[in-house]
Length: 260
Image 1 (cartoon, rainbow, N blue to C red):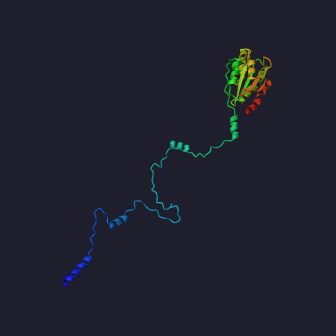
Image 2: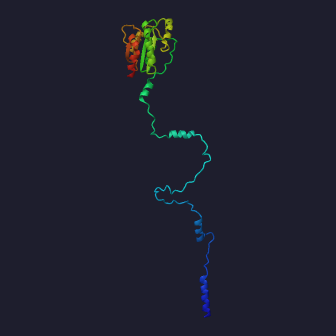
Image 3: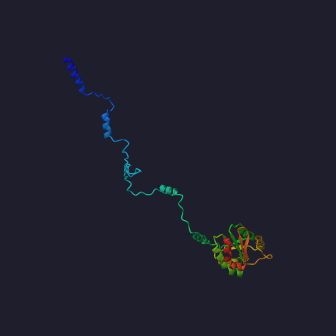
């Protein structure tokens, strides 16, 4: 009876004793893990919290860090490379402002200043004089023959000069030559050309009439009268021909021919 009571006491004592917990070295226990998870924040950072009325989740994004640049308050010069890149990458749909067609037409119609022609007398043969006209690529080429002793030539010279000034740079070239035989008399007449027409003296070897016929100028007989005006187009076609009357109205006669 005494032995049974002793065994019962030992059994009760064993039930009240706390069980021993074996902890492996280097392996955290459950309590340590729970403590760590509470005290240490998650490595992935704060989680997004759903917010009502924000379907895009813009308000639930975590705040981004603010970086303060100490040099941001200083004035910096623009980078030339960045400016050129910005110009190169300009959108293709950006159109340049269109200019008024009437303003463009007026700018093209404005004559350029005419350079001063040489006053030094240049001697050429009729063949060379006509060949220079043939080699020209101008839209209109005006052949003008005159002489210092010719009163009609002196009368229409201002009209010829005015036409040469007006149509300079508009596809019109003037090939003017004197058929004077007195070189000194022509030298005294050269200043009246006013630097508009070059001082060209065509030698009188008797071939000028045949060269004019070769150009297609209708001449009666072996001679020609001065002042003589003949206008040719780019294809060497004679489009106007006359004497004093045509020379006096040369500007009005050339205007419709240029527009063709």
